[in-house]
Length: 270
Length: 119
Image 1 (cartoon, each protein chain N blue to C red):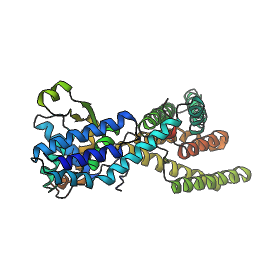
Image 2 (cartoon, rainbow over the protein chains, first blue to last red):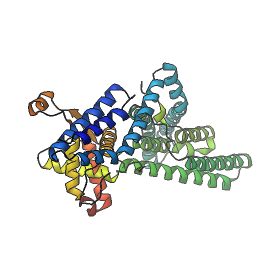
Image 3 (tube, helix red, strand yellow):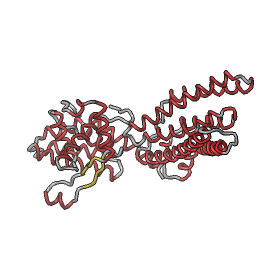
Image 4 (cartoon, one colour):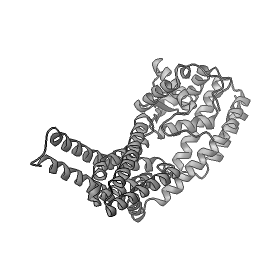
């Protein structure tokens, strides 16, 4: 009944699962044992077929082993409270700033709604949009937190949320825009204001649209991070639009930089 | 090594989901590794079964991604039939959605057999 091929498959499964966590190795060996048995039954014990099927999957077995080893080493490093706290602080430093922007959105909504000289329908629509954006921002923060937790439990991945060149390009655009804003403030030039704010609005809108589209079209639970990033960025738009207040706009820029340069996926599972 | 773009499925993953969906329509909502390898072989008209390593690595990855869920078969059933216990997989709603989306994106040819989709 295919003793040689089945024996080879079992031997190889025992080799590449050696040193892995007991439950992980035992599960894989049990699945191979079952598969080999069924295969031998179905083919009247064609030993060569079972052996060849094992050989063809060696590269995948080794890749799987490397991944499991990486997860195992990662899990050995995660349990300490200090490490968890450090990850939360470094990957979510912008969250308090984002909450401030949400509060700014709400205060702005109240201000517009209670303005004595306000005109409809702007006085009605404006506060609704602002409250909706504040809610979107807070929901994005929550979604990012939850997505990071799920992702860390699943893979412990430390991959960047977006490619480095994207981050570099975006930071460059933001720095140039900020410089234009500063020049605009110091010289009182409306042209600088107009160019800087237009660039910022286009960049933010494009990023938010891309993020939401990718997340909606993706089957990957990790895409929720991208969706959450888009929601947060959309939520800080009002602060950017009121650029002449300077401080809210700067905080909003800091939030955008924080969202795009951190990765909730490095947060260890608690 | 084949890498997939975020939010997309590898051809093998689509094949697994498609074969599992067909099995579910045939009254077998749960499947085990060898059974799905056989179904994919028949579906794709391939000469060989998917390799052990390729198949079980994909199943593990898909389960981790929430596309599949699994459980061990009742030990008494396996003992009664004189064979090792099976790990039984089932397509999750997320997996079904991902399959539908993948087939829609790749067009009607994705649902047809593709020889050589092994290893």
